[in-house]
Amino acid sequence: MCLQYNLRHDSINPSSLHAGTIPSNNRRKYERVESTHCIKLVRLNSSGRTASHFSSLANTIDLSMGGLRLRTHEPLINDTVVQFSFDDSVPDLLQSGTATIKWCYRMIDTAEYQAGLAFRSNQTVEAMAMYLGVHSQRR
Image (cartoon, rainbow, N blue to C red; front, side, top):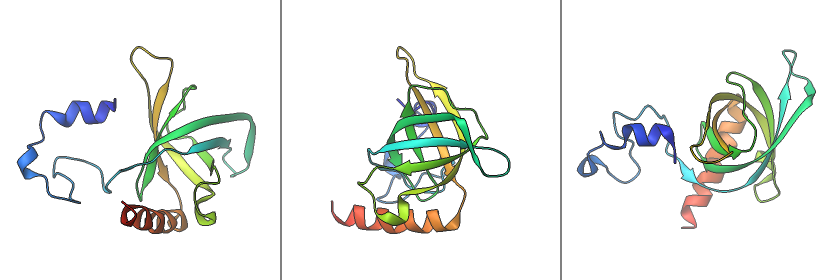
């Protein structure tokens, strides 16, 4: 369902994939880990304060050290800074943070959108790295 994946899927040679590596033609910096969590987004204004007229609920599709991909019923505007809040299924260090909306696409044949968010703070990146490290060891 990921537009970026579908556009690049045909150009990836399966024999070149190794566990834990990312193909050289993939622009992603970090490996994605499928993970579903409820998440709340609140738009922040230019001074970093909550813009009360915007709030959206979404579900994550996957997580990485650099950000996350989510599914929502509302379109999200590129380059908007949001505060995100996870449900209680993630550790306290990841309960909330800030991110920038990098892209948002309406899904074909559905009223849903998918969006990619990039974390804005090193603290969130480090907390996500710890969470994903523990999460991958459980599998």
